[in-house]
Amino acid sequence: MIAPTVWKPQPGPQEKAIRASFVDELFYGGARGGGKTDTLLGLWAAHVVECGQHARGIIFRRTYPELDEIIERSRQMYNGMFPGAEYKVGSHTWHFPNGAMLRLRHIETELDADHYQGHSYSLIGWDEITSWNDLKPYHRLKACLRSAHDVPNKQIISTGNPGGPGHNEVKAYFIDPAPEGELIEGKDGMNRMFIRSLVTDNKILLQNDPGYINRLKNVGDENLVRAWLAGDWDAIVGAFFGNWKNEQIGVPSFEIPSHWPLFGALDYGESAPSSFGLYSVDHEGAVFRIAEYYRANCTASQHADNINELIESNPFTGGRRPTAIYADPSIFVKRRLTDVMNHSAADIFAEAGLWLTRANNDRVNGWRVVNDALIKDRLFCFSGWNDNLMRTMPSLPRSKGNMEDLDTHAEDHAADELRYAMMHVYKPHRVTEPEPYEGTGQQMIDERLTTVGKRQGRYAAA
Ligand SMILES: Nc1ncnc2c1ncn2[C@@H]1O[C@H](COP(=O)(O)OP(=O)(O)O)[C@@H](O)[C@H]1O
Ligand SMILES: [Mg+2]
Image (cartoon, rainbow, N blue to C red; front, top):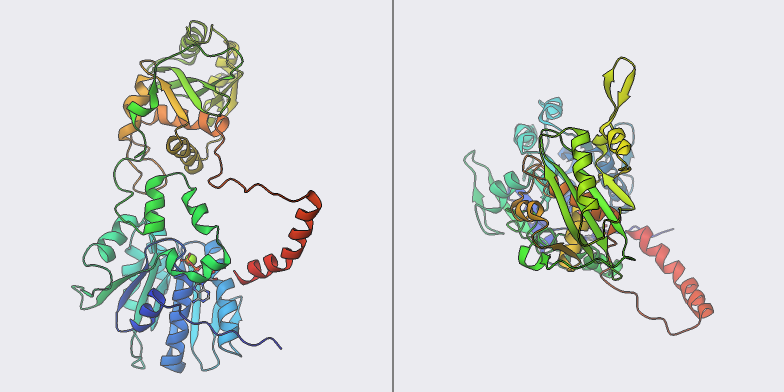
């Protein structure tokens, strides 16, 4: 028989959280990988022991796939800790041998929260609370924190890290009013507290997954890394491209060697500006934006003619044509011109000899790629030839809804076009280069075979 594993809080913030059962509204975490979900599930386990048969709990995640992760982890933890505890899949509910009960649910909006009005819970949990747009569902369900059986230490516990749509509200409610670990007295008679945990507090994770911190550093956006790794809630307010420095990116123009590849990228608009950039890549993978075309209030055929003119008359490329032009997906949408003709702006470009390739429009990953190039000094613009990109990039604001995206109300046409180009022509490099291997190929295979067992164990335990 496998011995039941008993979950224990790790020394540091997890222990502190376990002792904070006197706090009405606890916010735990503030960074990535600090053992937040484990803590939430662990605090519920302590609640079951403390409050017995009257313990009633509910833990929310924003979406069903995210909830799956908790369900999985709760099975690992509770099956070991509470022999006889049973998870009912149909109702997403845990039944504990002493009569306690825990629901695991996903809700997206305040309206979904209304379904729970009238319920009574002695513990309410919100995992990754910044993933909700605001704190409305949270406040709406505060009224459900009650018990007919006078359960002591009723508690609402949330976890989360900076970023996400709810960043600003969570920061204003839990982070700003008092330093971490200090009690905040709420106007409604409930007190609240923020307990900070960083990934460095989660020794178990770092031991099992030593590459975790490096992978986090690899997300590209320096400010986001500061937010997630150091738990800095102020890092991600303000300009989105904190790493964009015109004086570093602008370089004197030069003749592009004829064997360097040429690419184009296009963000299309008719009344809004169209932004076209002409790019090349050197042997080291650094990207050069040679020249741009940026104009509003033109038809598709006028834009196409102007872009052809820019390509043919360019003094640094000898008028060579780009091998591919990556364009935003909207330009391929067919519009009805007459009763018998459907035409897209891309068709009109093709008639003018500009064959467009549909660009990858994954925004968040696209910005990561751009930021990666900025951090590694691998993106340059010919000074004086890229004025609109250099004018708009430094001040583009972050989206309030998604901290990993730009605010699309800003003048982002050149930025979008740059993103399409970078998504296709720039190859981000790994942060850690693999160490040179001294042995023979056969030795490498033998070594890997001896570690396979361990690696499986690691994944099984994660
Ligand atoms: N007290 C603990 N005991 C055992 N493992 C833990 C503990 N705390 C955290 N872990 C491990 O660390 C991993 C990451 O923790 P998790 O709670 O998922 O972090 P977060 O929710 O902050 O991203 C978990 O999968 C778990 O394996
Ligand atoms: Mg988690």
